[in-house]
Length: 175
Picture 1 (cartoon, rainbow, N blue to C red):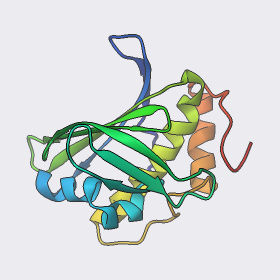
Picture 2: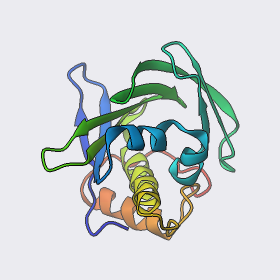
Picture 3: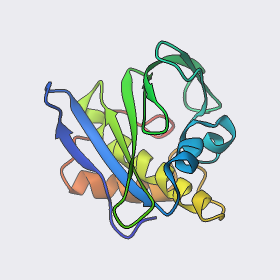
């Protein structure tokens, strides 16, 4: 688990609630792009199996999450290797990649929430998922599988609740 929580809860310009988390990777954007779009790579860090038709209007197929039924979403935008946005379970997920001045690539994940009360739950989930991606980019196994709440998720969730993130949404598999 990261030493500190990296998420921010905010209202977008259009008023929708969102959670934003980010990381910097010592890799070029095209390699990070593969990690966020390739089904095999996604299976190692994303909370659900995901397969993309990488084009605006394309389908995203989600599955393999024991706490959620298989589902589909819509690809909203693609600008390889800089941006991908898609619908997932009523939320909008935005993945933005940008070069870092000192080298490497910054990944910013914005989860536009359908329900503000899911902020702490979602931020904790993304912390666990991006921690798994961090390990993957270093060639290490993740500390915890990114699916389902576990000790790392609970620690992050509790931290986000203490930080004042809205937290009234049910947690699949827990509450």
